[in-house]
Image 1 (cartoon, rainbow, N blue to C red):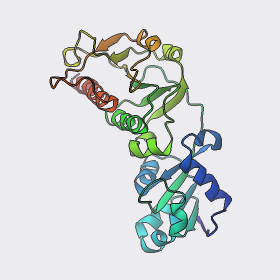
Image 2: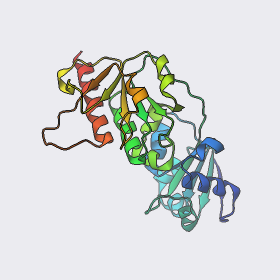
Image 3: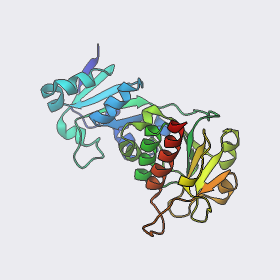
Length: 260
């Protein structure tokens, strides 16, 4: 049974910690926990069997919504706070009524042989979260983020990922040389590639490399790629957003895999 506490002080040390997690995208690395705001992320966390240490819920939500109360009570400890106080934890224009604090342990290691996505210094949290969501949907279970990529567990990436985090292996802070132990071909897109995506039999398993929004894939990493492919663009645009390019590439890999 959950321990339920009613908190009214803005200076409560637990709320101060959660406020830092919600406002500093990389704070989870120092504090060892992640703040999930909203019932969608909270449910995704529980459905994947991820550990939960704490729930924070508004007084209105806990008193008036049986669904929110049941969701909060899935945590071992529940803090019920005034609606206005919950807003101080929120990074949303329209704050949710519930959030979870979940433990975060650094130190996951790269697993060889898995279908993977490599993020090469991607800066936009929306792009990163979108790619994580696409990867989870298309059966790519490992995300390998090179140094310089947006923090994978930051609140903005979590919101864009829509719960995909809890079905993925997420490894951060890698160098290109760390990918040498992956043991699957690296595949990148290039506007200069002679071979088009739909014309090729793609390797399976493989690791798709998604490059920096402005600079593309760094040369040291491109040299490690076994294959470069082009994405046909009959409309004549200069380039695709990296999130869109990832969706196309991962879908084509998944389609070919399903066809055997």
